[in-house]
Length: 324
Picture 1 (cartoon, helix red, strand yellow):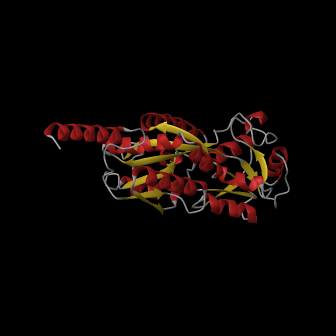
Picture 2 (picture 1 turned 90 degrees about the vertical axis):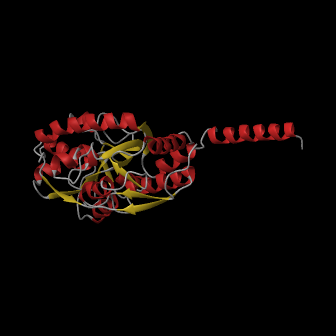
Picture 3 (picture 1 turned 180 degrees about the vertical axis):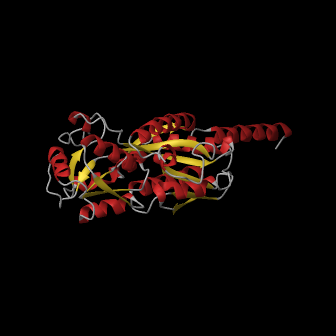
């Protein structure tokens, strides 16, 4: 081979390598660690856990890294969040958690982290719309009957949530206050446990997206959707606003967060991978089957949205007497 041929071959190879590293969907640099712990701050089996595993599998495939899910339930997700806040900021530990960890829980109890200074927002993945449901053991079939029963039996009803300070807990307290109903809160470590408790009649009602699959099977009674609008899938289930109950929105976000001060290039790799996943119908279908809706939001927007919700809940929790 002549000298000119060798130069031409080297130039062609360089072009091919450059194209490969800059092709859409491929990262220009390798992820900095081989194994990532994805902390899911809820018990196994609930919607948050399922979404966490979907996200972990997707990131494993797209980043070429082994993602391992670790369930660290308790205290409305704040125990797992604290673990992540203390982890190394090298991309080896991430959190798949809900917005309540950052926007409501810190207002209601002492947590071992600052919801903003101790985390790096990476991307929001999905959102879940909650539903108010009751056990089949409770003799009610409509929201009107539920309200009447609650007023006739003050203090006799129990309801479950994934923990004190969770969005479901706060939304339920706000709703009950508007209805004039007294009920006892029973916290659990995960949504799957709450659903089982309502199915068994250990608690009489709950407000959570995790209950929707049981509604589809007619195992729980749908009563209402918090917020202003009905769900397209359940056109016969009224929105609380229709009853004049201006409750807190029933949506919950599921997001990927990291410890504070993560390298910008690592954050960008994860965010880009989640954005690419969000653009595929296969990923969306997995989320829908898990009971949530796709809702991608980049880290910059997510941080601002969390701050705005944190400020709003500060006012709401003070008004209904749940602020610490």
